[in-house]
Length: 258
Image (cartoon, rainbow, N blue to C red; front, side, top):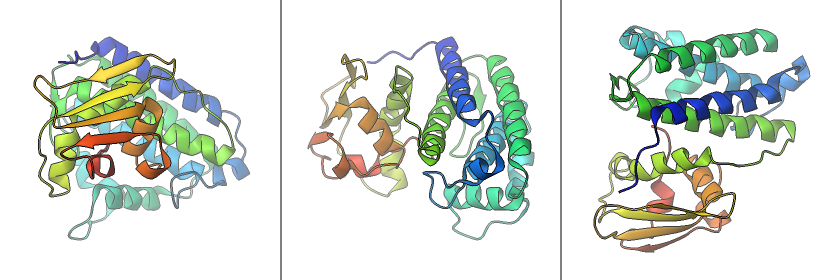
């Protein structure tokens, strides 16, 4: 069974991902903040606002204030059947319109507070989140995945290329571990365990394997797998292949977020 990376490594990876995003944002002028991102319908400012809001939610979770914060998320009552994406969109719309530097400062403060709040937790501490309670290390990994996704959204909006690295490993592992949740969320039965054999950015192999035989196996570039799980590219546009019982749907359902 694949071992969990130490909590400290996940927190370090999250800090490094924040730094990469900060490097893209520092010095942006207002036209830069207004540029469309890769995230459909959101400007770069919207993306950073969303990250600030969700970092603030993480702090609230670690401090026992999660229910209070989520009750006012977006400052409006969500309609019946609203998805997590709907709620995020409504929250951004409610706070949209601030100058870019103000949004930037809010995100910096929220990210710093998030690092401190998560760092004060034990790895196994149960914390509430959108899809239910999870361990602190799982929430930190979820935050790493989200910041990585949105760093790519910002980079695309700015026409900048990013170099993938080892931070993809815990993101890929998160997507792999939550495959049963992804199937349940979609109302689809999962035939059995899934194994991954991914090519890392440095050319080495990352394997994520269940305890017993795998019913389905996914192979290909780790970057492709993470982008598919992030819903940023379709599986058909990648070099990924899936074989086995759920080969026809596993790449359509895998995801890194609720």
